[in-house]
Image (cartoon, rainbow, N blue to C red):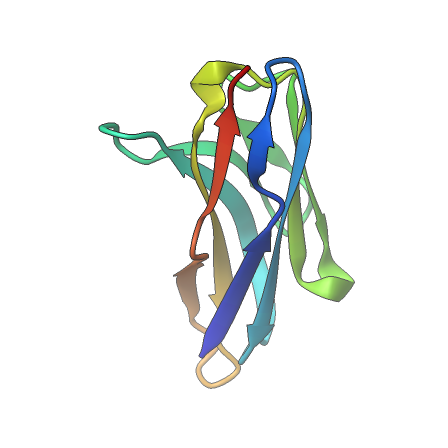
Length: 121
């Protein structure tokens, strides 16, 4: 099994910054893509940012230029630096990690428990 532990959410004023982190542990051969998704009340979960094992990134249009995703492969950790936060960024943020199992070398997706981000004055 694989466990994901997220941290870094909280309450911030518009224009402020937060940094989310998500660390994977457990039965891991290697990690492929890592990403962040968010779900606002009454809305569907949406992709925020994804980073591949090679470092390629993809962002939702709504966060381009404000958010930066990065990863530390030695620590099995993915980060999301969020700057210039807006009230519409308010949501529960979830990390998603694609792990290659050491048992059969097949990829499996795992989700973090979610961390709340509230942008409000």
